Length: 157
Image 1 (cartoon, rainbow, N blue to C red):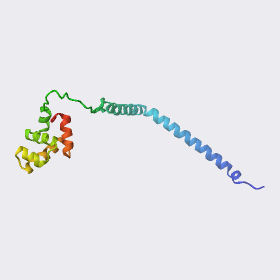
Image 2 (cartoon, rainbow, N blue to C red):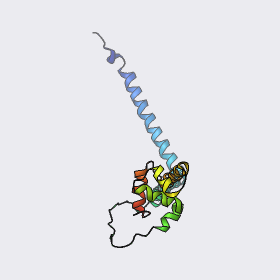
Image 3 (cartoon, helix red, strand yellow):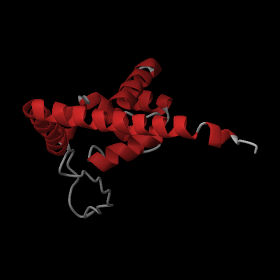
Image 4 (tube, one colour):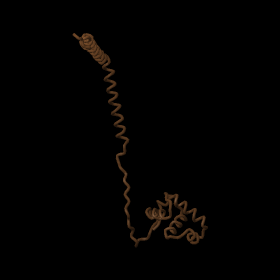
């Protein structure tokens, strides 16, 4: 009769399985004993983790803005029969001088730098300097943008 591999080592396998089950039982009892012995520390740690998570969640909720800012641009038509008044508050907040306002008004009429200089009796370099400062204060790149923005905020008609 020919013995198989499992037939020869059947007893060894059963003892190994029994030892593995016994080891598992001992580990489980050790863990259970550890939990009973250190139950206060385990519960305190669980409570600490819970309140840490609650604190993080609450801080994120409280620091998020509750309002949403939306910018809506609308075209507002001014009554042409009323005289135009310069928005002095906006002019002061941007730091635009009276002379720069004059240059801006002449720009809005489509005048070139040479024509603006001749009208205001200043040099071409002075007009260019005023134009550069206007562009910087209005945060624009071109004359058309400057005129459009000045009309929006009420600096020119």
